[in-house]
Length: 445
Image 1 (cartoon, rainbow, N blue to C red):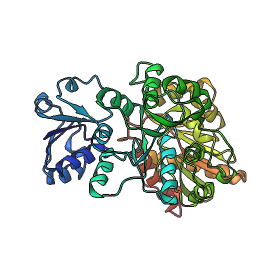
Image 2: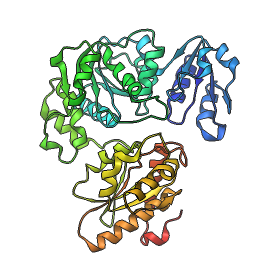
Image 3: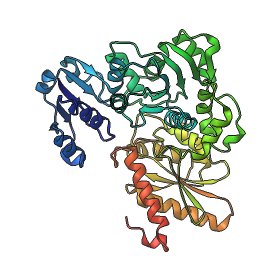
């Protein structure tokens, strides 16, 4: 077969797809607009398997040559090259078309915020209890990895936990010939304004999310305000549409973000004690309210995956007993900063990261509301040092725990490869601060 990978990407999805088909002796070409220097050792690894690269541009001849094209989620359906392709697939469409899940319970999760954490803890708890549970989707684990596992091992998967972004669901609608398999659980964590730089309006964004609930489902979970909408989109019995945020769990302490996970797990009639026992070994998800550690009683938290204004408030709610020194700002996603106003007012200090959202919307919004802030930094190390200095000064005058929180409320592409690159650079800044005796004088920018 002749396979074209349309978009190698920086998060591993294109690599997994290319490696999967190359290992099966297919003829594989990979095309991406970025140049070779953007991908490091990834290209040489795929070349050693026999892959051919077309970088810096796309060629019509490659799309006409391919028996099928594996589309990256970031490529819009309107892209002209998709129209001339014989067949277009995604990692999920390939997985569901080519493998049987008759013996597998599939838990599918979508939402604007919290879906990765929800999927992560559900998978962790199921594994800890003793099930063979696997996770894939928007968190950066390609469905081709699940396909590889199913071919390498003869045993079936007990639970497959899938995290779907709106773009992945959009692609399933457009390029999936068969319906998705039966879903044991379909869950919506929440709906907030997002991706308005790529969607015409919120109705179109919501429509893509709701595609998940048009399939055959045993249980559906959603915020109370969305339950009637779910009932409208699905044929599921009303008594099986549940509030994903229902209940108070004292065992969680401050980890309230795990309530949706617990409610999903409860549908499976698992022993509640076993579920809570799994909490002690759960470390959380990188770049999502990720506690890095502390220096001189000042805690550093990496929430770089907070790429919309409302996500900043979501993160703030976890630190009600702390004073927060917020690092925020970045690239515009055609969103308004209003959703982070309460957090901005509550922050002890605000350090800005530079970018189109910061310059065009956030600074005017802060000035309009009379909120003080430090100038925009292009260097995250300088921004982290400024926030740390603010926290240290405050700590010397009042005995309240201080947090340096990176929660941008914006995308990252003006100065970083993606939000994960931004988070990793913040982690490096944290290590530099904690690794020096005379911190302020020794950090190298």
